[in-house]
Image 1 (tube, rainbow, N blue to C red):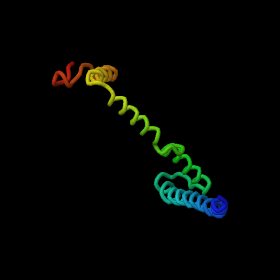
Image 2: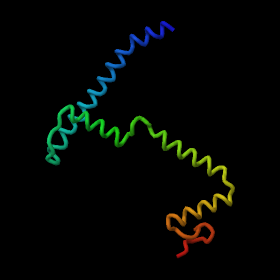
Image 3: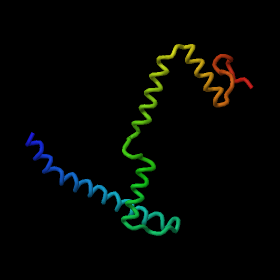
Image 4: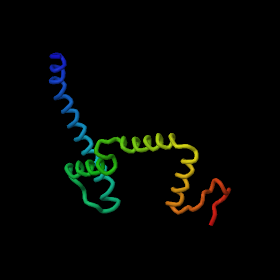
Length: 117
């Protein structure tokens, strides 16, 4: 147990330094790309390192979420598939018909061979 604690204490500063270096490098890359592309193309102002870091964080929040890595979506899909697998063929057809009516498709297209108007 003590060996683990010593290893953690020795490696923690390295992890922290690596994390800070990763953030600094990401901010600098965003700043360089912004200042290289957007002012000449669109006439937008150049950004500072801190503004670039803010843009990086904003993009991460808007596009990447807050560390969920898409697990919420995959869990919803998996639970829905499990529920559908437990349905009988009759229940499944009733569900499909209700969904078609809900989105405005009307009658079932599988039974009649074509869409009814």
